[in-house]
Image (tube, rainbow, N blue to C red; front, side):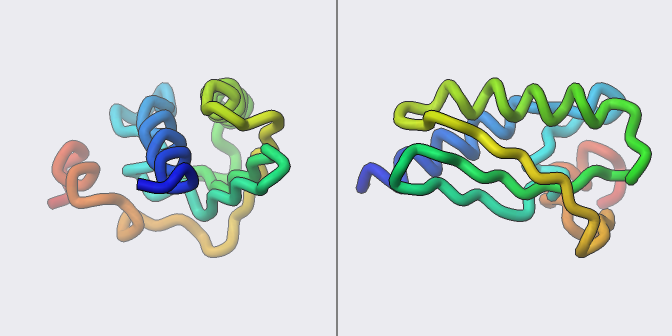
Length: 104
């Protein structure tokens, strides 16, 4: 496996350890991660959304993502961009998340 794929796998693995305190499913399986862009200079851009625009845990979640991404070898900086388009829906969740939350 090449180095980029290994880092991407590590990024996804760590994203699966970030939870909204009110939902027992990680942000990756919830479908909140819209984009991961790891650049050659070590900067990482994560584009994500929230389950609701007024999510009270937004700052906590963003900081948790940022701190965990800095654990990835070669990542020197992390920019987490919160976006609301496309709007998040339950259809974006993984099958595992739907089962966990009783939607499947």
